[in-house]
Length: 169
Image 1: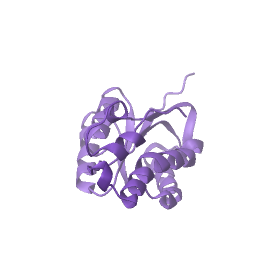
Image 2 (image 1 turned 180 degrees about the vertical axis):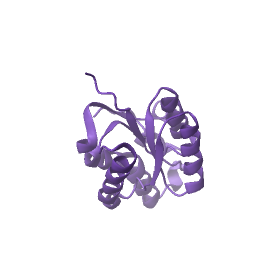
Image 3 (image 1 turned 90 degrees about the vertical axis):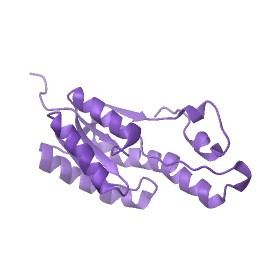
């Protein structure tokens, strides 16, 4: 008999923008959602309520995707949330979406700017995915969202565009 448990997606940065749109689309497709947010809990709670209004289960967890040292605690919190809400400890999809923009002319961008964006858009994605691999079901999917700025540039987006290039795991 095939597994009848719902599919669950973890979407980083799922409380607003493209991440929220992804979460809502997946919920409409019958997928339950755990989303992360950085600091705006009210926006995350609103996204959870919208997903639940579609008849799906949802939860929101705080995560700073630029803080690799916090990933062990996040993974424990995710396991607890999955166990409490779904009586399981695995997900089916990981959508690495979280990110921030920085608008600084190339000549004025600082090393701190570069490090912050690198930690969020590249290093954090790599090590969060690595940390969560044991929690992704066999046959699960990992999606790393990119940006149009990986294909073209505009003034003030040199660091961001460089970090949002497509990759395969």
